[in-house]
Amino acid sequence: MSEQVFSKRILITGGAGFIGSHVVKQFVKKYPNYLILNLDKLTYAGNLGNLHDVEDAENYKFIKADIVNSEEINAIFQNEKITDVIHLAAESHVDRSITNPTEFVMTNVLGTINLLLAAKQFWPKNQGNRFYHVSTDEVYGSLGDTGHFVETTAYDPRSPYSASKASSDHFVRAFSHTYHLETVISNCSNNYGPYQFPEKLIPLMINNIIHNKALPVYGAGLNVRDWLWVGDHVNAIDLIFHKGKNGETYNIGGDCEMKNIDLVHLLCNILDRKLNREQGSSAKLIHYVTDRPGHDMRYAIDASKIKADLSWSPSYRVEQGMEATVDWYLENENWLKNVTSGDYQSYYDKHYLQK
Image (cartoon, rainbow, N blue to C red; front, top):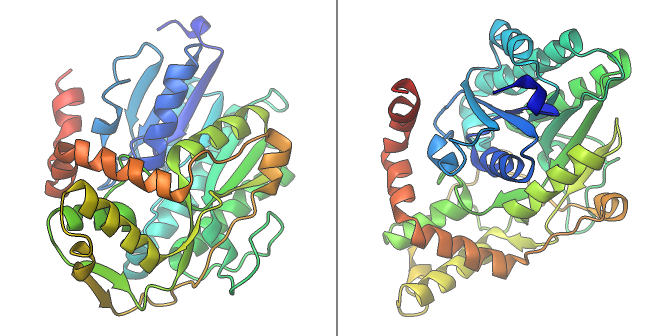
């Protein structure tokens, strides 16, 4: 691949994960003049099988590396002549952060700092190089029955996961102010859609309903989340990367607030219909379990800024999106089987080490 061909050489971290793989595919297909370098450690949630349709593209390259390793990151910046970063690599499951907070500090905080330091070292000032940090609405804490998170909402993280993401957000802003690195940040609500690892609520429920397994619901299921279709999130990331203002933060939400228990009932009803089961049969699988420690009650995003400044809006309502998500998992049961069995972890060895 000739360097002169590509106008940008974009490092997308976490590109084998759920959101990251969707971002990689959109950028590879939509921008043939960009070289997309997908950096992923391939932990349990990284699945290169998600990217099979772009893995042979001329403007795509996969790099197996760990952002915690600063020497690896510096070598990649230097050897690959990285011009921009879209940083999605993160440990992201709250339950896992409660069990092992140190791992979240290492990846989410130190890993982000290593990327920022590499950008500071290898990018000349004021040359249009962009560092885009993709973050979460969980940094804002928990809401009561009313109100929404805006970009100026004070940070109040409640879990080791959200604390680690809040810290990384602050470091990105600090590098922008201190070293004049050109940065943007986005904070999104809960994503859903194809290729999501089944430890997360929606694919977990879909998989368990299909196999008539218990549906574990924390507490009374009254916690409220705002749900964002992953394709809408990717379109927002695309817009922010290309048109977002340096130093700004953009909230991305789906305008789809729903209690967890209502969401589970919706999935039960959809799958009862699609699997030709008696309505109400899947709901009998609901099993209430002890609530998560420090479980935030409600998240809700005010996305007015990105709507006004970048003309973005979500395209999927929650009912429509859940139908599409259920259809994808039903049509891709082999993917779900491979992921739940762990077979997907051999994909890298089969498709990359033997090349």
